[in-house]
Every structure is written in C-alpha cells, then in structure tokens.
Length: 554
Image (cartoon, one colour):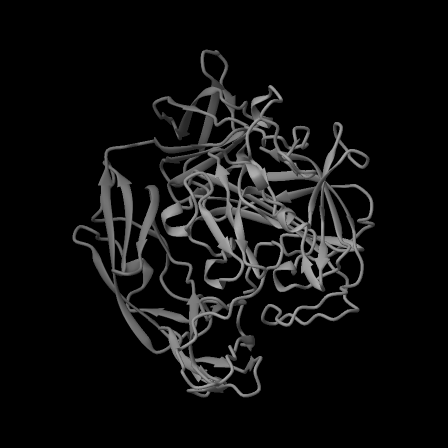
C-alpha cells in the first residue's frame, strides 16, 4: 500500500535497510509496484515492510494461488524465485529481490472463511476457535444437550466443503461431537461442543460513546429479543428500534443513538418473557478540539512569525501549544524553517470563515528546493541539517469523535519542482497539479516505541523512512481518515474524486474509519500539508492551503 507520510520542509525519502557493501556500487532500492491476481479481493503493497498482502475470497484454494504478474520498478532487479505462477500462500512466501544488494520481500495470503455453528434454544453467540478447531455453543439450564437440533453449521468455504456427518445426525452433545471437514482436498477434524449456562438474559457489555452506545446481551435464540433504556433518575423506558438491533444466534447488540454527552443512563435487555438486571453506564464527553478556529496566536518572541497559541489570552484552550508547524518556535523552542528565513505557515486576518483569522499553510522554495507549508497537532522537534525535519506528532486525547469538520481553501498550480525521488509507484511531471492532504488519526501510541514524547508520542524524521507511520495499518491506530484537495476537486478516505471549485472556502467532513470500536485512544494526530509530496521536494512552490473552523463531530 502507499505509505502515508508527514509533510515538512526539506523532507527526503530515506533509502532504508540496505545491506552493507564496501564496493563502490550505487544504492538502488527495488520496489514492487504492481501484483495481479485475478481472484484477489484486494492487494496491499507495503514498501517499508517490503510485504505484499493478497486478500482472497473463501472460494479460492490458498495453497494454489495463481499470480499472473509482478512488476518491479528497477530494470536491473532480479528475483530469487519466479513470482508469476502458482504458489502456496497458506504460509508467507519469502524471496529476495537483487539489484546491487539483496532485499527480502514477503507475499502474504489472507483468506477469511465465514464459520458458524448454532443450536436450537442457544444462549449468546457461538465461539469459533479456528486454531484449535473447536466450535462451542451455549444453551440454558433446561435444555437437553443429549437431544439438540443443530440449526446451522458452516466450517469451510461455501460450496466447496463436505462433512463426514449429516447435520440431522448431530444431536447428542453430552461429550462433544467430532466431525471431519474437507475442502480443496484437505481434511480438518473439528469438535462441536454445547455448554450449559444458568443465565436466561444478561447484558455482557456497554460500549458508551459521547452520543451513542453499543449494548451487547445474551438471550435465547429464536425468541423476541429487545432493549429499553432511559436517562438515570427518570421514569419512562424508551424502546430501542428493532432496526438498531442485530442478532447472532442468542447474542444481540443494540446501537442506541441520540444520547447526551457526559450523562448517566440505564439499560435493560429483554429475551422473550425474561428481563435482565438494570445496567448503568455513562456517556463520554464531546470534547471540542482546542483553538479550532485559530483565534489565539502570538508572535514568537523577537520574530515576525506566529506560534499558534497565546499564553496571555486568558482562555485555557488557546493558552498552550496544541497546534504546531514547520516554522518552529525559534527563541521559545526549537528552530524550524523560519530560522532559515522561510516562513511556511501564517495567520491570515483577511481571508477566514470563522472569527477574526485563519491559518494559511504556504509552500515555498529556496534555491530550487521545495519547502511544503504545513500545520499539525504536535510539536516541531528540529531540522536535520538542510535535508529534512523532525516532529513529535500528537496530543493527549481520550474521546472518540466520528468525524472532523473543517473549512479549507486551496490555491495551487502545476508542479514546478520535481524531486529526484518519488514514492514507489508514483509518477509525476511538471504538467501535474499539486494537491494538499489532511490526515486525522486517533491511537494508543506509546512514545517509548514510536520515539516521541509522552505528550506527542509519534516521532517522524523525514530523512529516515523507518519512522514513517501508515495509519491505515499501524497496530496502535484506532481510527483514521484523510482528505486530498486538488485544484479542481477533492477525495475523502480514498473514495473517487469529487469535482469542485476548491479555490473558494468549502466545508469538508472527514469521517473516521474505526479499526477498533472498543479501544479508547490516548492521543490525537492531525496533519495538514499544502503539498502532498513535499516530503519528496515535489510540488508547486506557490501552493496555499487555508484552514479554519476545525470541529470534531460526535
């Protein structure tokens, strides 16, 4: 997949992980730019990890995957095995690409099979343990497990699987039932088990957000299951709409909407004639993003450029550093581009949407080297000579918005500066227009692992590609979204481009794609760049991105 990078002045793409070589050979890092597998649902290429992940439907034999073609961006590259052909991807396929050095790559096959096992009168959802090949269902204490009816069974690919026993013969679960499952010529032996519980209906968990909650309960499959809720210390129960309840056997989940932030509620689940004990929960805060309209800014001491807070404003959210830029803080902190005479982020009192001013991120150049305008949540942490910049991304954050709304205006032109190196798979010329990018992420990043500080945990060094973070796949990222703004349109979260006049103020809403609906974040990251490929010295040296009225949607 294409790596999501950060945007700073004088950023370069570091050639990483090369084998030591004392011979005077050039460093030529090969990258796989294209893989074609006819039956694949999706293919992701990760240039930093040097992996290709092929997602396959369950109907494909993962031990016999036909790779039609693989393209590598260096003509001199040779592979240690023939990649085009049929391969067993039930385990990672490792190989080497050689230029003047060796680079190990891995192809990973992912095939998720939908499996289920349910019985009549089941309580809660079944447990499908793929590693140990066990399927377990629960029933109430009055059930006779020596004579149960199996209501559904699927342990292999649809239409490709045979079983050693007919489903009608699976009745006596006193000691469990072994069953052979065969697909694509391979046989697995599974164990089917039924356990007895004393519960009739019980709320297992409440996942409360600011204005909604997900309530999970167990009940009896096949009977009417429902939920009611109310604000604490009120009398009337409110029925959850049936359309907002999903069921999986005897497990059912309510999505309760329209709740008040920071408010206590009560909820009960109902299964047939049984009613669960009352469960209390409290919704999260709907915390606004600090200084979202950039009303509070002040000049860096002894300088003519701004920092994006004002210690003397008398307003808490505007009195401390939440937003930063590649300008740096000069005498008050860390030197950035402004110390070299290049200001790339401004306060604009003439062109704004809300309040008295906006922020303008403005790309510039010095001696033909591009310096991309930027604004981010975090703190600039230093220049790397004249070749790059460092930043600690993020600020502490513990609430879960569903989107970020903001106003932007973008003026740009064709790319007048093209760097010597571009991202793998990207080809740009002077006829291509520049584009801006805004990224938004929530996560649980540990500064000890990501190299930053406790307040701003994700450290990025634009001269070291190993520090780059892809928020789409990063294991500590809970949710993320992004906006790309072109000279004639925009794209949200990788969707198709929408035609629009982006040279005027437009309200954008960036939805957050949650990778984990349960986890609570510890930090928030926002990054705005006037030139998307500024890390590669590539863009239009006059691009200007205005930002105003940033708001979190809950």
